[in-house]
Image 1 (cartoon, rainbow, N blue to C red):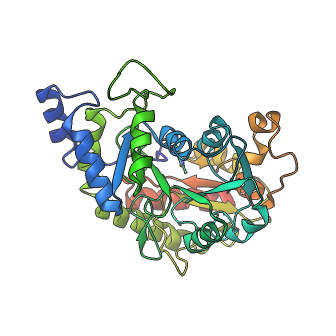
Image 2: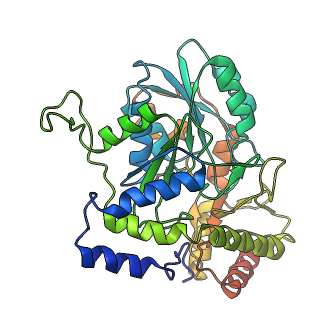
Amino acid sequence: MIPVNEPLLDGNEEKYLVEAIRTGWISSEGPAVRKFEEAFAQRTGRKFGVAVCNGTAALEAAVLALRLPPGSEVILPSFTIISCASAIVRAGLVPVVVDSDPSTWNMDTGQIERNIGPKTKAIMAVHIYGLPVDMRAVLELARRHGLAVIEDAAEAIGQTCDGVACGALGTISTVSFYPNKHVTTGEGGMILTDDEELAERCRSLRNLCFQPGRRFVHEELGFNYRMTNVQASIGLAQLERLDEFVKKKRAIGDTYNSLLSGFGQLELPLASTDYAQNIYWVYGIVLKDEVPFDAETAMKRLSKMGVGTRPFFWPMHEQPVLRRMGFFQNSHCPVAERLARRGFYLPSGLALTREQAKTVAKSVEALLA
Ligand SMILES: Cc1ncc(COP(=O)(O)O)c(C=O)c1O
């Protein structure tokens, strides 16, 4: 089976891990955590980085840190991971979805403004699958309407938008270090901001809201979202190779583009826009309507041929749990609905070889024959 993702851990990961173990620093108190926060924030061009235990926790802390009034509305793409909507809902806020742009699969920025009302307080922009959201439009709208921007750059580590690093574009931004990300720590995440107060609040939320003076007396409920020194040690080694990893992902994307471009029944990822060049976090494909089966059937058939795949996101406005809570009763996002039913992604991890990509392409050809 060609796995859908396999990380590359053959740099300094082992060396730094051994150092963590030999020095006894395995908890979140260890020196690698602060070092990783500083190095990652610097690489992203931000003043502060707050490392946490995963990207979902990063989103939860980031949304809470903004202290938006209960019941405020936050606009997000329907086509994203549940972590985005759950962070909004758990903070006592209301998610409002917009549909995707059919060519970039990112939130259609042209639909944001008509969803801005008196209760709207923030836009959550989520970079999808390797191409960023057009943040020029998001930032202009946010400035004009006085909204905060939560930027989920989980899938866009090493990407830029109009020359600015993804992760540097939100009032508060987040990333994930899950093993399919461009930098992994096994499980992990980080919050990035230039606002010292927001960073401080995230540090407090991550650490049970212990108080500096009276440690075990709490004014607020926090979480244990701490990242360990073991995770940060892996992260430091990974970060050293980010440029190389981005190059590798682009090479994988280019390889698939050339192998699959002849298949007219497929929609392939856009290679570039006027503000970014795809970094192919994953290599997604969408079955055109003329293909007589859907993504689910395609993935089952590819699995039988030894090719691992993953479905695209399922839209937030079609999530049973969120609909039961009363959200999205009148939401329609036809592009997101179609992407969910017709789209899936191919093996695209950093360890993928050209030979494996060729085998995958042959299997896709057999699938469509
Ligand atoms: C866009 C996006 N946001 C958030 C997350 C959540 O990150 P984690 O899996 O580290 O909780 C992911 C995970 O893949 C993601 O793709």
